[in-house]
Amino acid sequence: MDGGMDDQALKVDGTPSSNALPCEANALLRLLNDADRAALAPHLELVPFRNGDMIARAGDAADSICFPLTGIAAILDSLEGDRRYAVALVGSEGFIGWQLLLGNKRWSHDVVMRAEHGTAMRLSATALHRILVERPEIRTVLLRFVDVVMTQMSRTIVSSLAHSIERRMARWILLYHDRVREDDICMTHEEFRLMLGVRRSSVTDALHKLEEDEAVRSVRGRVIVRDRDRLLRLAGDTYGFAEAEYRRLLSL
Image (cartoon, rainbow, N blue to C red):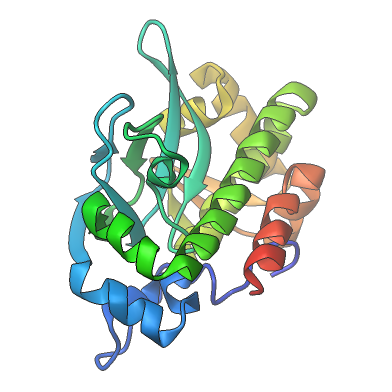
């Protein structure tokens, strides 16, 4: 995958084999050594989500962390007037709930499921803190991923200031494509509006340009990736840096 994360790290649609633990569908949980993973396993709860489900709400008490197995968790920031904008995406390459590692007991962002069907392994804050005392290497792995998410957020900010709508749209499609591992992606105009911070008419115009470049095909509520290499060229330097950091920091 040119410029992207490791195939195995982002294999969010890779259903574990019948003799595999569900947690093996999450790259961070796979990365832990056997003893650390065994310490977590009894405390992990499998949780299903549907598209649009609110996983967390900014300001609410953060009582758990979640390791996505399938689907995409969209991290949203809010402004006055119920305006919300996407700042990052997390799939089975990572986890959500990093506030608990940073001494914050409340969610700092809204988190919404963006997939027709999603699943995650949930770990309570109480169990997390107890295990981290006994197994400090788990904290190291989780904090490395937090750094990657912060990098992804910073690229979102820089891209919104420096690049065209079409280039930013190409980046977001690549971020989705990495995580769903399918060319047929559920992405609505409303989701693009949240990611790009533009009017729906601007979303339509940008999609048409990507279609003219034969990078994607847009149908109602979906985007079909036709040529990933073209998307990479269109995205330019908006995409790839955070993905390279993921590989570097997590040795994947």
